[in-house]
Amino acid sequence: MSAVASASISHHAFFAGLPQAFAERLASLATPRELRIGELLFRHGDRADAFFLIEHGLVSIELYAPGRDPVVVEQVGEGDVAGWSWLVPPYLWTFDARAVEHARLIEIDAAALRRRFESEPELGYEVVRRFIPVMARRMASARERLVECAIDRP
Image (tube, rainbow, N blue to C red; front, side, top):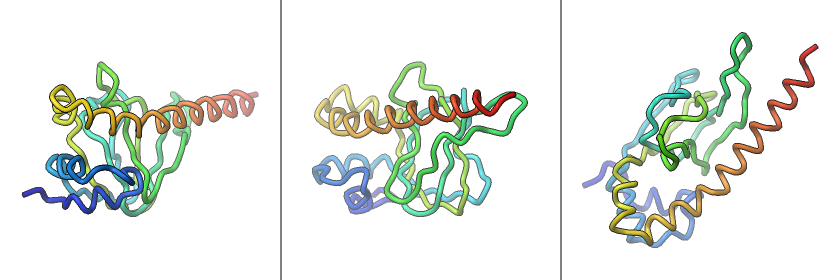
């Protein structure tokens, strides 16, 4: 039995409308996780084999900038998701993520999920179609922050 009930997946805003059978498959790959304020969830360049549904709290998605404070790309909270790099080879994190507030998350084993996509393409479609807007939003936000940083530099 999973440590996370399929109802937790089904009721999470990111997976609204997901068929119950798919929620059960995701729940079988899920683990509850908590982060303290300031704790790193993932770091740019490390292996990306998970994603995180945020149930409570706030997580900052950051871009490391040598010689500067991290550039905050986006802050995500309840009902959102952190981590899409598990979808794109070579499966390395593109950003850092850090808890701004105490956070309660559901961690999904994305390496196992990628393997399931081979035998269950319908599940793969349902998951990937939800991540595409997240990826587009994060990249647009990163671009905006980088332009702001360039303008702020003397």
